[in-house]
Length: 130
Image 1 (cartoon, helix red, strand yellow):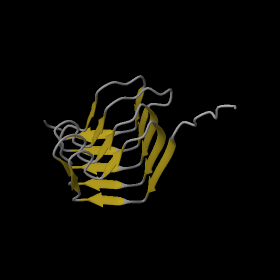
Image 2 (cartoon, one colour; image 1 turned 90 degrees about the vertical axis):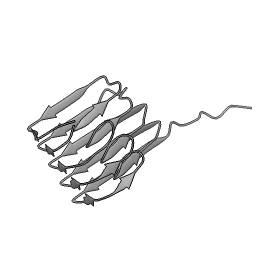
Image 3 (cartoon, helix red, strand yellow; image 1 turned 135 degrees about the horizontal axis):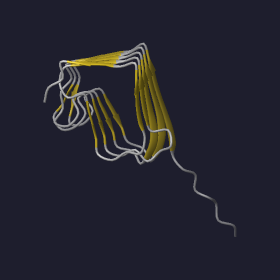
């Protein structure tokens, strides 16, 4: 008998032109992503006044091999113990984290436990505080 090869779990999360306002959770006030591998793409979205009692006021990613791409989005006054806007447990991907043309306003914008690559382009960070 031949053994079947187990396929890796791949997930794709795409959010465009979305508003995430006033959400709460333990981790990831608006989005909690937990998969072994995956792609997260967020564009033209607003994350405002989201709250996580633990990590990632707006977004929490607990994944071993993923890429996170955020384009033309605004994160405003989101709160979490670690990462007011974004908290990531680990990035072990050649694609890593890529943020372009986005704004982060108020509170520490992100916290990354472990990562390989991290790119920020055309971003605006203002009034950040712990």
